[in-house]
Image (cartoon, rainbow over all chains, first blue to last red; front, side, top):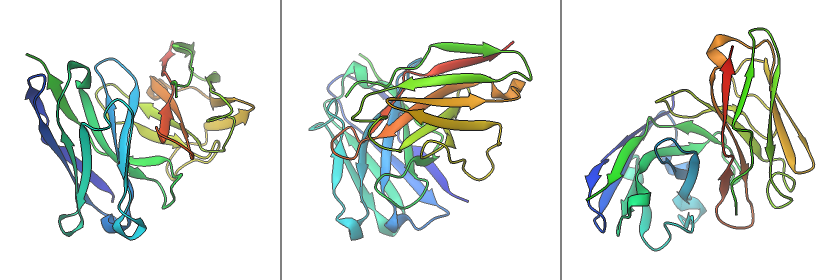
Length: 123
Length: 112
C-alpha cells in the first residue's frame, strides 16, 4: 500500500524558513516523480513543484509564486522527499501535501496523497 | 496560467445524476487528454476519482464518469449517494510549461 506521511509543519514568522519532510513507503520511491501541492485555508488546490527521479535527471520545476524561495530535494536512501521553504510570506499559509503519480509518466495524474501538514506564516 | 473554472456548487437528491463542468483553454483542458478529477471530504486529502478524462482508478465506483468536449471537461455522478457530498476539483497537466498541474476552482456537491 502506498503511503506518504508529511511532517515538519508549524507556525513561522514572515521572512522565516521551514523544512517539510515526506516519508514514502509501499512503492519504489527512487523511480517516482514527486510533487508538493498546497491548499490555503478554505481555498482550492495549488501545485507547488515537482522533482523527477534521479534516473530521469532529478530536475525540479516550481510554480511561479514559490520559485526562488522554495527548494524540493530527495534522499532516496531514506525514501524521503523534502520541501525547504525560505522567505516565507503570509500567503504561503496552507496545508502542504506530498503527492506522486498514479503511474510512471511525466503526465501522470497525482494519484497518491499524504494527509498533509499545516504551515502557518504569521507574526 | 489561470485556475480552471468550475461552478461553486451543485446539488441533487439521492439517486439523481449531477454533472460538474470544468472549463479551461486550448493550452490545458482542450489541448490534452490529461484531465483528472479529485474528491475531497472536509479535513481529508484529495482522492483521485478519474484520470485521463474518463478512466477510473481501481476501487472507484462506476457511478463516476467523465468526458471532454473542446475546452470543457465534465464529471457526472449518477445514482447520487450521501457519501458523495464533498468538494470536487478538476485538474489538467500542462506539458509545455509551469505550473505543470493546474487545478479547478472547486465545486461543493450537496446531497439534498
